[in-house]
Amino acid sequence: QVPQHFPASDVVFLDAGNGTSALIHLHGATVLSWKVNGKEMLFVSEKSVFDGKKAIRGGIPIVFPQFGPWASGPQHGFCRIKRWNSEIPPTKDSKGTVIAMLSLQDDEETRQMWNYKFKVVYSLRLQENAFIMNLTIHNEGMCISFFGFSTLLHSYIRTPDILNTSVHGLNGVKYVDKVNNNRTDVEKRENIFMDENYDRVYIACPTHVDVSHIGCGQHNLNIKTFNLPDIVLWNPWTEKAKAMSDFGDEEYKNMICVEGGKVNKPVTLEAGKQFECSQTFTVSPAY
Ligand code: TA6
Image 1 (cartoon, rainbow, N blue to C red):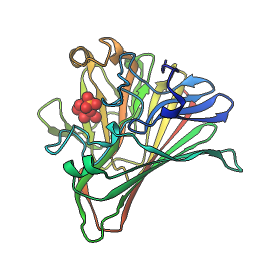
Image 2 (tube, helix red, strand yellow):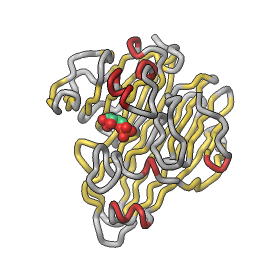
Image 3 (cartoon, rainbow, N blue to C red):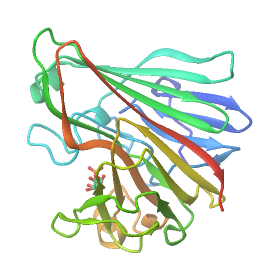
């Protein structure tokens, strides 16, 4: 359902064959589409704006250097609203993995908000039934450490029915509930079904979670994370859906955000050092 009329100069298309493909928009290096056997696994709002200014409502926006509201700049930082560079054209390696590499460097605008020299390199590797997204944040300064950044991959997963989709793997994990005055609690369910507005930060999670009945409902998604210890679960539900101009009133029924992040404990990165994190999506037939 992603409008296919994007100018070729604005997108990077990965084709791994057998109906497996991915489409990345250079605005925010936002993955817009990931198809397996021709079936779309990601959600992009029909009302998303593609004006090169506003964050795209859906796909996998990149959150850096700040998750959530930010005194120095836009909510969720500037990465998802900057135009990234495609460093290498998509190439297929000897094992059939299609690789793309995008990057974003500091500029006058970012330094106004966050006065650091940085380079973020986003490498995407698409295999027949796995999609590996690796984000490496380089502190390009000579002597100044980055203090306290957070980062997160804000993945909008598609579902035919939010009431039949569940998140498995967070039982026993502590979470902060942003819908209930940031109260903390411990998850007690094996399978988390959403039937209301959810906005929770699960802290220090296992490295694997599953999301059931995604895409057209016949697949389960496994998300494996590296250095993204926290997981945000979000669904705006009815009232918040109505309040977003770039989101359909009923679209909350067809998406679930399961977002791997390093948000609970911000990162301090010394000059010349790098912070690497990744998430790997694989799908299997729904149980
Ligand atoms: O990831 C959940 C969240 O932080 C929610 O609080 C909600 O604000 C969502 O992100 C979307 O934020 P956005 O700035 O894209 O409207």
